[in-house]
Length: 370
Picture 1 (cartoon, rainbow, N blue to C red):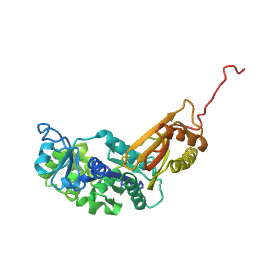
Picture 2: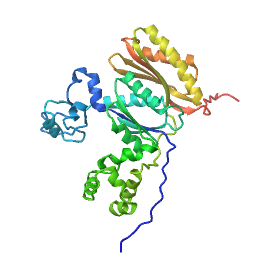
Picture 3: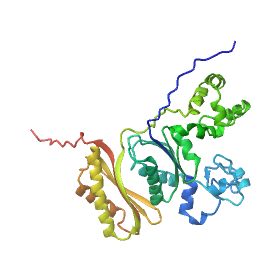
Picture 4: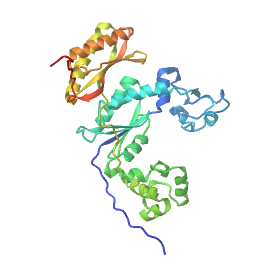
């Protein structure tokens, strides 16, 4: 007698607003930005197999190299066979981590509900925003490009699964929206390997069962999927119906509050630099007051015309007063510590960290007070 299962009820939740932001060939793009001579080359981020006995794995490749079949996690030797004219660059994860921090600083200008996935991608929950999400996503992409000279692709939907699929749909520099009414036409056309949770072994078994596309998977019953793939089968049953109720996992306590200004034309004098720092000090003070927070560390960030970024910070034992005059004075000291104005600047930022709610105040008690 064939075993049957009780069918679990499903609920499609569509009230959230989720963005998945995926930087385009992130590591390769950073290297090309920093060395424009690479722009038309096939660029592979991996140790050159011609110099290390064929060892190494591809971290990523630019789209010129991908057109030759190169992809991440491939052996560097295989990548060389596919793209013998490619330029191999040893990964510089310190540089990529810094660029990732810069991208996340921009995310925080739009929301603090951010779940990082890797250096190059993150989920953002914008459910509390009322403006048009497409316009907001365009602004975010433009800001990332204006400040960092890096492109990104964005997927917009009501859950994480669909937002990620959307971000991958039209790379590079893509922006794709999946609404509830788009679920069937979008998912039915997807190859089975694109469905989250379908790895190489699962895909192989799927093909043995005659399942090639999302439309084929949709035809499988809940019983069939659970019987064949156990718990993963139920998740696949949900995903192919556009259901994913996982929340965006973010830090509830904000770690920093800051403001940055990007300049075009560039800042070209110390007087201009000091004037901008004064404006930033006022903006950061206002933001701290709105969030009812204060902190103990002030950070000055400077990015020059060549995209070199330096930061200098000052930490006090007590909380720094939420006063623009105080913040401006400390920031001027930090500028002097950095060597003052030395070359044209494309970005100045001021950030307060080590935050605590204003309810926690400095209490100085005299040892001799009766």
